[in-house]
Amino acid sequence: MAKVQVVGLPGTGKTTAVQSFIDRHHKQNIKHIDIAHYDGPRRHLRFINDVEMGTQNLIAESATGYRIKGCPIILFDIPIQQIYRNLINRGETPDEDYLSLLAGQIMVPTYTIKSEEELHSLLELILI
Image 1: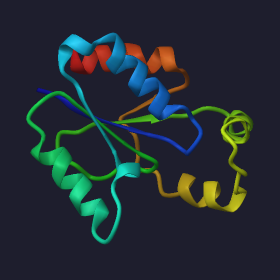
Image 2: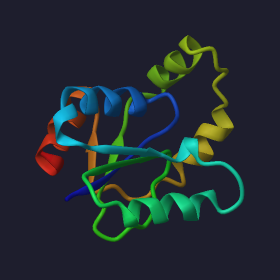
Image 3: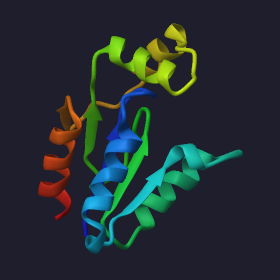
Image 4: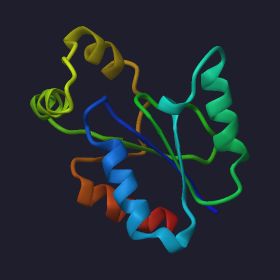
């Protein structure tokens, strides 16, 4: 069993890339946990607990990452102009201040990738 975190600013394509990887490897029984689906107080602690307690191959997704033992961090890093285009294409207004704040909070990654193809290749090495 392996666990990995995929992090990056909103609009980088993390969810799309992770979901396409899981769809392509559906027989591998890989679980995807996204912090965006956690609400309320202590959501971060519940997210971390779910990652730590996971008993199958797991991809944990968040914007900034967390200190989770044995769970390397992959930073999905694309140009900010592309992030703005992606956010606008999905009907959101890019908030430069918010994105800058998040960028400064991203945990030091174990790996940095620049495309969906690179992410898929790295996830295959770690999880398959």
